[in-house]
Every structure is written in C-alpha cells, then in structure tokens.
Image (cartoon, rainbow, N blue to C red; front, side, top):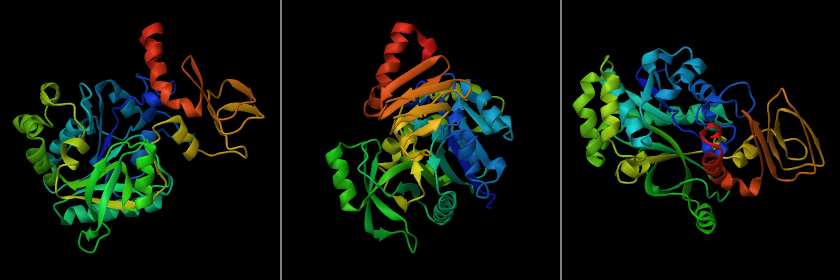
Length: 361
C-alpha cells in the first residue's frame, strides 16, 4: 500500500431516478441498494482496502449529509469529510478535494470515485486500479477508467480511444473523443466499432497534474482555490469554501477538463460495473430468481416475472400477475411503474413535489 495514494469519494448526489428509495434527506448512497447488508458508500470505501490507507480517504458531500457519512464511515475523522455548501457538479467538488490533498501531500496520487456504483469483480477492479495508480505516478497524465460495453446502452457516456497510441508498455490508450449519452442508433454504432468504452466516472491522476489542468482549462475555478489554499485544513476552511462555491461555475470535470486536455488516457476494463443510476440497472445487477425477478423484502410472488421489488422487510407484500414492473416502497411512498417507463420517475418526483409538497421528494 502506497502512503501517497489518496481516495476521493463523491457522495453529494440525490439520485432522484431511484425515487422513492432515494430521497433528498437520505440519498441512495446511504442505502443498501443491492441487499447485501452494506450501504453503497460503505461498499465503495471497502472496495479500496489495501490500495489506499484509511487516513487518506476523503468524502466530499453536501453539508446536510456529513452526519450520515460519519454514521456509515465511523472510522473517518471529521476533517476527512469535506462538506459542500451547495451542489456545483463534479469540477468544483474535485477541485476542493484535490487542492486539500495537494496541500497536505504534494506527491499525492488521487483516485476519484462516485459513491453509488456497483462492482461485481472486486479482485479484477483492484488490479485495474493499481495499474492506473502506477501509470499516474510515473506520467503527467489524466486517467479515466473505461468499461467494455456489453450492450448499446443510451444511459452512459462513451469514450473513443486510439488503439495505436498506448502509454508506454501499459494498456492505457490515448482518448480521442467523449460523447454524452447517445441515442440508440449511435450507441449501437459505438459498440459495433470496438473502439468505444463506457465512461465510468472513475479517475486517477497525480495531485500536481490535476491542479495544473485546472489552471489550464478551468482557470476561473483554479483562481478561486489558489486564493484560499492556505485556509484549507484550518478553522477558516468552511467560510472559504462558502465563498469559493459561490464563485465557482456549475460544471462537470468531463466537460471542463477531460474533453479538452491533451494528456487524457483511458484504461479499458471489465470488472462487472454499473453506475446503479436507475431501477433497471438494479434489475441487471441484482440477484434474480428463476422468473428473472430481483426481490429485496418480505415478498410473495405469483405469476410474475422480470420485476424489481424493493420493499420494507417489516411489510409483507403479495404480488400477482405483474410482468416487467418496478414495485418500490420507502418512507410512506409506494411506486408501481413499468420498467420500460422508468425514465418518467423524475417526472413523477416533480409532480409529487408540486402537488403534494417537498416532504415526498
């Protein structure tokens, strides 16, 4: 284990597509989505055991969730939980953590991961991460992990790589293009071409490399954090971050840096990955019964198949005659929806908020 390796977990999202399970006051990263007895946040941090020392783990989250983070990760010191005053997308989030780590350890190599992704092949995952960390330590590069696509999924971004341009003797390829969520026809073309990967949202780089990239491609955000870098890690940090976030653009790290930089490489991988962004992704990743149902709860099923059912264990649920449905209950809200219509969940949340008040979102 390298003492200069750091982990940044981005845990500030709401995950509204997983409503009603994921709610504003208790988002999905704090839930046992997979029914394995651990929250997504806990699973995420545990996945890096042996790669990153526990004292080098930082979680960036909304300040409203800092107590939840501490509850799920009691081993973290309070200063390892970085509270954001408002959501500003991934670029300010990564700037905050990267500047904080760079100030503490100029030799740091940083792994950045979302808090709510699933990985089935953890041994393979750790091998891939170690390859990326080693490459980042030795080269001035920005690395993203790309997942070998198994289907033309329109819910993921895609990364095109140049097969002939490797990084030394590694398996890393120079990135050619990033494409946000394509339509089905384009996604099929990407998969058929063989030189596109799903964008996992997992990054690896040296602290000095990403700070340089901020100066070059997001100089306005770099300027803000340069001004207050001496206040990071001090009692003045929270007040500085309030000001920094009020002055920072709402922009993703992909759009702000990764799509523009000329030293971006992707490491192709296949470790049973899903971003678990939707109920349908849980159906793909979860344990299915003989009728292809994914069940988490005290449920009795009759003549039903291809369903996702996630309900409180204290409530007996009896379902008959459903095919391809989501049945989800949490905190006084019950959702019954066709799996093929799950893209409407955000619409349902908006309608509920406007007609029933904010207590249900």
